[in-house]
Image (cartoon, rainbow, N blue to C red; front, side):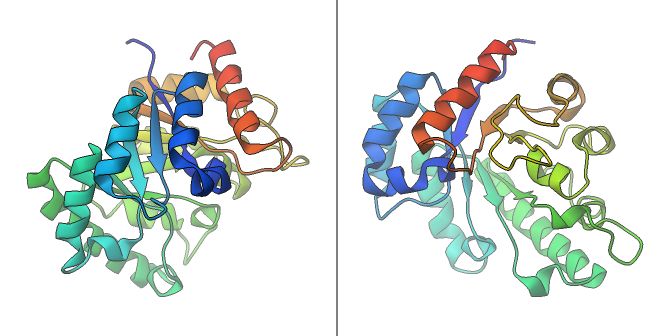
Length: 250
C-alpha cells in the first residue's frame, strides 16, 4: 500500500491555535502535514474553519469531542458541524470517572457507544475512543481496554495512542493484533521512561513494528502526531516530529 497520510492533533499547538488558528493551519500545511485533528474550535464557525482548511489543502481527519456532544439533542448539532468540516471520525478523548470506575461502568459505556455508532452509520460517520494510560492497568482481572473494545461494535474506532499506552505498560502490538481493522486513526506519540520530552524516534517505542501492524492488521487510515512537551516551541516540536517520521520513510 502507499504511504499513509500524516495529520497533526492540534492540541499539540493549542496555545498557538487559540491565538491564531488560520496562521497555525497555514504553518502546519507548509511543514507537510496532510491533515489535522481538532481538540477545540476556539469559537470559530465550521464554515470558516472549512474555508481555512481548503485554502491550505488540509483534511480534517478527526475531532476530539466529549461524549456529551453525541448524546440527546446534541448529536444532530455535532453531526452538522462535523459534516461541514468534512470529518467522519468523532473520537472521545476521555471519560468521566463514573463511566470508567468499574467493569460494570465500562460495559455501560460500551453500550452507550454502540448506540451512538448505530446513529452515526447513516451519516457516514464513526465514533471512537482514545486511550490514556489507565486503560492498561488491570481492573477486576481484566484490562479496561479489553472490557471496552471487547464489547463494542467493530466500527467503534480504536484510536490507539502509542505513547500513552506504553506509559501505562500497554505495548501497542498485541492490541493492534487483537482488534484487527479497528485502529483507523493512530496517535503517533513517543514515550521514554526517563525523558518525558522525547521526540518521535528518540524513545522506547518500536516504531517499525507499529507501522507494519498499522499498515496491515490495523486497517489504519491516518497517522496523527501528538506532542505535549515544552522541550521546544510547540510549532518547532511538531515540525521536528514530522521530519523524524519522514526520515523513517513515512
